[in-house]
Structure formats: C-alpha cells, structure tokens
Length: 383
Image (cartoon, rainbow, N blue to C red; front, side):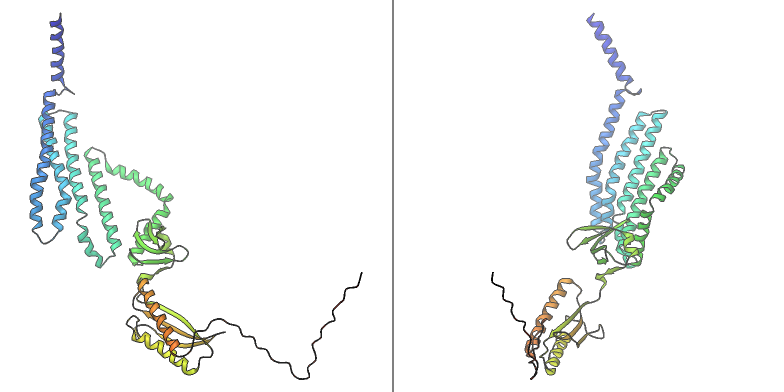
C-alpha cells in the first residue's frame, strides 16, 4: 500500500517537473535562470574590464568630453549585456505563439530603453557643446535648450516603446491634442508665463545672479528662471517665486547692469562760513574725488561739486559723483572714506557742518511807546 502511494506521488512530481509552468518544464526554466544569472555576472565583468579599459583610453586624450560620454553610456551598455542574456534565454525556450511574441517585444523594449537611456545621459556631456552657444544666447536659454532636449528624448523613447507593443501613437497624439485644447483654455496663465519667460531670455533683461527690482513686487537676486516663474532671493534670504508675466509686463530695474554707482549728497555748512572758506571746502572735495581711483572721472560720467542752495539753516554744497565699483559693500567703503575726507576738509577750512536750528530776534520797544496794559487783580469777597 505504501509503495503504491509513493509510486503515484513520484509520478505526480515527475509530471509536474516536465509540465512545469505554461508547458515549460522546470529543467528548461532552471537553464534559463542560469543563463540570466550568467549574463548578470557578465554584466559586472563587462563593467570592470571593457568599460575600465575604454576609460583608460579616454583619459589619454586632451579633452574630457569623451570621458563624460563613456560615463553616460556605461549604464546602457550594462543593460545591453543583460538584454543579450534575455534574447539567448528566449531562443533556448523556443516558445510559440504569444510567448514568442512577448519575448520578442521584451527584447526590443530593452534595446529601446538602453538606446534612449544612453541618449538621455549623453545630453549632459553635450552641455559643454551647448555652452559655446552662450556667445550668441544667454546661459538661461542654453539651460532651457538642454531641458527641452531631454524632454524630447523621453517623449520619443516613450513613443517608440508604445509602438513596439502595438499601441498606435498617432491616434493617441490626436486625442491628446483635443484634450490639450480643453486644457489650454483653462491654462492660459501657464502659457502666458511661458511666453513671458521666453521674452525675458530673448531680450536679456536679466540673468541668474543679477540684482533686480520690480516696484511693489520684489527686490533681490535672481536664482532661477523657470518655464512658469522666476525664483528671486530677497536680501533677507527668503525666496520669492514670481510669475514671469510680472517681469514681462512691469518695469524691471537691473542693478547688476549698472556701469557705475552714484553718490548724491547735500552737504550743509554753517551760515557763518565765509566766501573763502566755501571755495576751500568746494575745491577740497572736488580735488579728493578727482584724485581718487575709486571714482570715475568726466567725460566718462558727470561729476559736480557746486554751491547749491541757501537752506533754512545751512549753505548747501551739492556733491554728485560715481564710483567705479557697483558692488554694494565696496561702494559703502568708498562712501565712508569720502565722508571722512569731507569731514577733514570742512574742519581744515575752519568752519563746521550746519544742523537744523531756529533763531529768535528780540528788539527793544521804541521811546514813547505806550505802557503795556495789565488788568487789575480780582480780590475774592470775604464770606
């Protein structure tokens, strides 16, 4: 009895072994697994030997573009090694019908993924080529071009894979076109910001790193010009994401595009200052500005030091000049040195700076004028 049960159970095991999964016996499946494992190991050896050898050749060249291309293509080459293993395993299985079709589609898909993966990664070293376009285009436009290239590679790769699996792309695109019209009606602001961003880049109003100001909107340093908005870092280090239309429709002041930085002061001296002292102060300030390398000189920029006005409590000297630096910190240092110099010049002339004051003049009453009437004091009645 036990022997018969054992015989029947063994027959079930043998039948299961040869029937396997979907008509494929487990022996063949083990062989397929061995092939895949072998090529996965070969993938590692390929990376260590072949890729390392090619890297060594590339390092001998004078340019680093080939090094970057090899680093970009290496992951795709490893995937191709695994793809070869999948192809050999499929050939060994020798499937018919739907199984053969699936294996064939899978191999084609892996080849397409490897190809477009390599193409996508190659766009990174190609940025060195795109950077040469910065002579004609701005750096931000080059970044947009690189991003658009990568998006195009991804879309083309997705369309290729869909086509491999028999999904028609043209009707899908047509359907998306109708859907896009509906979306566009509700996304007008998005497209307006996109066009505004393009106009900013084409007109070169500002770039990354520039100090800009839009009245009532933002003032700070530009960090990124995106498809929809621009990130501006305020001076308190808070980021502000401004829609591109704000820059396209408003007046934008680009302080980083300044050639010089202005100093415009009104210096008030006391009214007791004599004419000779005024000449000495004015000439001393003018001589300091013209003699310092920190300040730009006419006719490059206008420069004025003039007695400007008789104010309520001071005689005003106007100083109008420009520093060569546009860096805020360096400009503050130049202003400070100029202030110290003006202080020495005014003190050296024997005069002083005026400050707001009010003078009251009292005149004595003329002889024979009437006395001032003082009303008699009232005495409270006794109770």
